[in-house]
Image (cartoon, rainbow, N blue to C red):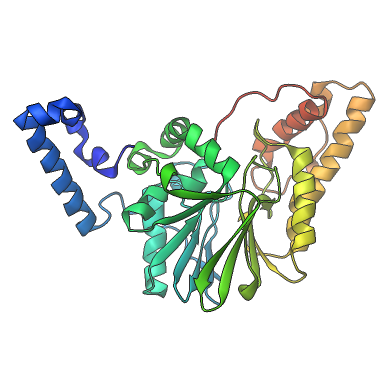
Length: 351
């Protein structure tokens, strides 16, 4: 497990190898180096976060004690620091609950500064929406700050643990090495759940964590806080932005998952989507579920008529052209759904 101090020490990495195994017991220099690194880590933790400091959009108040930072609607890149999803937090009697560890420690620290401007209560809990980089790469910051209650749905946890190195490398290249390098894998610190887990957050309030099924990603977490009348479906619900489909996205399962989500959610509940602004069920249904259902009908009609993949890619989706990242996604979405409905290979991708 790579600690944040490894990033700071940099060139000492090779020497640090001497501290392993028998070398520590036999080599005074190795013992001294190990002691130095331990003391440096203690000093770093006492000083607090020492990495890059960035500024992110101001958190919006969703309802009493509930806030969300609405991320960029385009791809993760250096200009948005990897903040292309929503980072949310809720203030309860016993502390603060953060939803999404963020894409890197710098983002987490920027969010933490905003939390500290609103409340002096400590962050006690962190949950991640899925296995993608923007959900969990920044979780190690929260661990360094003393958080010990981390949560993920079991499949999402298995996926991000297995693909940690690949995801970190890709996000580092896309967003910037300086921002991403300090992140380290804290998968072992997570508590996982299968279908549902409830967290007592004090004052008679409970945060419910649900898994409604496969969708944008195989594993995902939906947070529901009945006492605040708000639900966070993560990337299974979009607002305004065009959907992006990956090789692991099962769009037919996503439709069924969204139906379970709609059936579960009480009328009038505030929806904080994975992408887009806080809204209502009708809006995320239109921008997510209705789009998928329409695409399934149109692509299936092309298949039934003996149409080719090229014909599917040329499907007229211009009615959705006002949505963010439309130009980057519409042809790929058609291609994905065509191949999925025909049972063909969807290719390789890790995000």
